[in-house]
Length: 208
Image 1 (tube, one colour):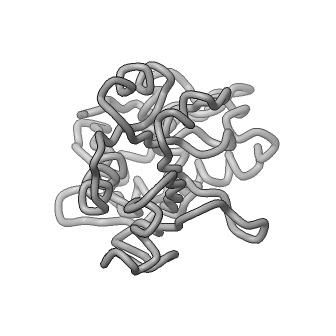
Image 2 (image 1 turned 30 degrees about the vertical axis):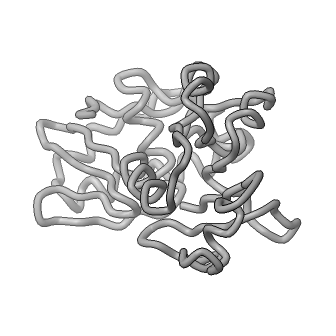
């Protein structure tokens, strides 16, 4: 997961360039890659943007964390007075000032963990790993995106439009995800259904 920090002042502007004793720009921390400052044209879009609440509230397009092909999700930061409005607008989380990189990493770890039940088995998506008991199966980014969408929408289907023009990738990711389930338990693969002309659905329930 790539996180870009757009800071309006210190110390946040120095949190990931090494000058504040934090991780270096672009450094990996577990399954997270941190960037600071505006993006350049040759960089991939981040999964999440951390930005001042006042700026966040001025943005027109807001999406839920985990949605696909609709820009990044957001973590806003600022005074308590703006927290309720920021959550109403759809931010993934809110950092009350002052905050530290340690707090940001802890909150990201919570967002990066998805616990759900399929076929009577309790599974967890933690970073890139799909875990069941002592078994861990690694998922690629598109599989993780699809799995989050399937769990968040269950028992309703995820429509093909969720992947925009990448419908072939949608079907390919679903096929690979079904294989990953079968590696954990052959019976789990049948819980992922193709809905003709619509998309896919997963017989799952979120465990929080």
